Length: 219
Image 1 (tube, one colour):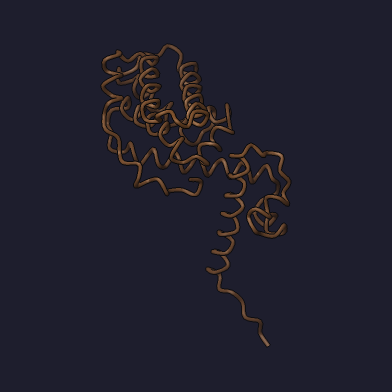
Image 2 (cartoon, rainbow, N blue to C red):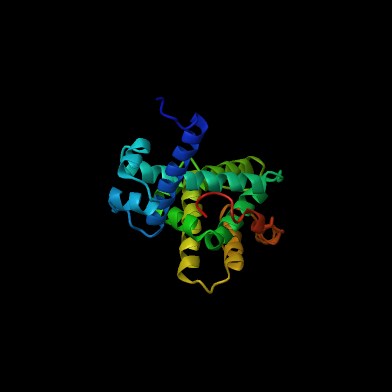
């Protein structure tokens, strides 16, 4: 008698759920700073079998890389959506920075994954780093920024963002919006923008993040 098999689409959905569960488990461990956790503990947290793990990933390191990549991609896509209407690269840069500052509180696990990645985040070709560099370069070309050393400027920008995120986690009573806007204003001035213009841009209205708070798997 023939054995009934699941249709291909059901099998694919089950594989997607398993992979998503493993990535979510990995993100929770990264956020908690538990990078040396054994594979068995990850599979238990994901509620999947050890064999299922190796159907998707060759190693824990590959899983953790995938977990970080997903966070970066989700965050980058969100910034693209929220800045798509802007023609001024300086405003796009400022909006991305201000929103990312607010997202440190609104997406605590995602932001902890970003902070745990540390300096590697600054050199990544995904997420906020390449978008920030693109907007700064475009702002330089448009005469909105005056930067003598782009790489040095981006190192300072990235350090300011990571420092802001850590501060907001360390001081939960601090107002995230005012802190993010204050740091953004300082960064804009660092990039050569006149103080009055930096203050004006940081006072512009932002898109409502409530509609995006549940987007992505890492929130």
